[in-house]
Amino acid sequence: MERSTDQNQSQGEERGQSQGQGLGLGRRQLLTGAAAIAVGASAGVSVGGPARAVGGEGTAAGGSGSGAAEFGPVVVRPGDTRYESLSRGNNFRFVGSPQEIRVVGSTEQVVRAVSDAVRTGRRIAVRSGGHCFENFTVDPEVRLLLDLSPMDAVGFDPAMGAFAVQPGATLGQVYRTLFKGWGVTIPAGGCPEVGAGGHLVGGGYGPLSRRYGSVVDHLHAVEVVVVDRDGTARAVVATRDPDDPHHDLWWAHTGGGGGNFGVVTRYWLRSPQSGGNGARPHDDPARLLPSAPAELSAVLVVWPWDERMTERAFTALLRNFSTWHERNGAPDSRAAHLYAVLIAGHRATGAVQMAVQIDAGLPDAEALLDAFVAAVTEGTGTTPPVTFPRKLPWLQAVTWPGTGEPGDIGTRRYKDKAGYLRRGFTDTQLATVHRHLTNDTGSTDSGLLLVGYGGRVNTVAPDATAVAQRDSVMKAVYFTVWADEADDSARLAWVRDFYRDVYRDTGGVPVPGEVSDGSYINYADTDLADPARNTSGTPWHTLYYKANYPRLQQIKARWDPRGVFRHALAIEPPPK
Image (cartoon, rainbow, N blue to C red):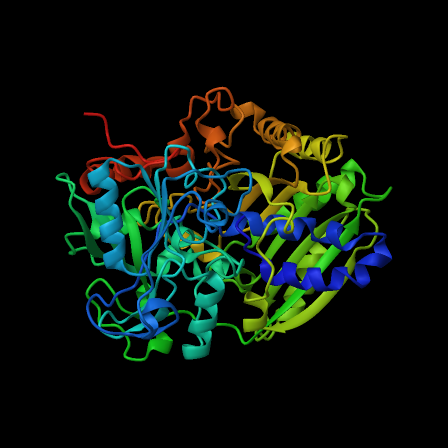
């Protein structure tokens, strides 16, 4: 999942070892939901690359932009001791078999690699962080896998008047550098180990999105290696400026998903209100992005799956959580500073959990936290929850090591499915959720997440960026994580049946309507393109992009006329 609440999850991880035992819950059970959130909040197929100085030299930190000797390229082929490790992404369900893995360190190396792939007719895929839910980078047809992880520089580019981020940088690296250098941040995902490359282009979100919007609302420019009709690969810089002749390429990268138009080799970040569309930006870099909180107040709330967690109590918890988000989505309210995830683990996990955080510097932060927890619990009749409050300095919270990987070193097989929610589930859907979370086929690593959303995200017009879902208040993430290949069929069947039944009235998928609003491309799910599992008559691309898809098709035709960049959910050019 997008691992967007890892601040809270990491706190739960530490507490689970000591206080969790008093609930009769082991550390792993307490962390099931936390690990699962990590799976969903920041992932996406990665397209990214290096950050050479386009438009001037900048102050960079890390990677090839730091003044060190340029990395690569390094070529790894079958038989090399590195091959088995580098042919795998984060999801161990998928293992690639490319003829060549090329690890690169600059935009120029990316251009050469793409040129080589086109010249030799080899299918190419691009990886930065590797947190792709599907097999986009390890498809058997991929012959050249481009690894951009060494391209991890983060810094300020004075010529562009914006912060430059290479796609190989992890979100943790981005947060550290922005905070240490300027005290600023971006509203990206909560998993520090996810690569910026795929997260940003898919329209990433995270714990500060209710307060500051989607991360792409702060995207000023992007550098992309594209392929012309004659097969020439070249780097193009596209900006937010509507007069930029490449503006459409910028727009496509504000939520159009990775692996569609080219290889992103650098992002520039600057908030629109700090200057843009012809306005002169502030001279002080510390005013170009949102200020980071100094400290977070957070709480992990745990309700045991005991005799008092009846169907009525369980559905009341979910209904209360949803109602609060429906009523507190105004972007300028104090409530928009609060971010929460309800972790409804299967009964086998032993608990339902809720992770909540808020900027501790707000005068009424503790009161808002207490009122929220009370509102979610009110009238449920559940066993009084166990709460684990804590305060953490900002940097410690967002760079906590080890968060963001589903399961542990041996359990890295997972399947996630998702849907936007304009309001809470219907009573029928809530009963369905309860039935699947209490059946005999679930596991200790399966469940549902309800993730707080909306707020300032919903102040942007649906066509202003490629992120079309601009009036949703939550995201729902259905997850299962397991260890052994022998369990693939059972675990996939469980999560697919769960998802299909929740959306049975709309053909097994979250068709945009009064309650649902499609799905999120960074939670890529090829089932949505399977007519056996999507019987709604609504195509997968409408679920992800809604009315923005035709524009994305036109941009695809212009910038990837040869169809070099493709995968199982790739944007297709318009029919001729």
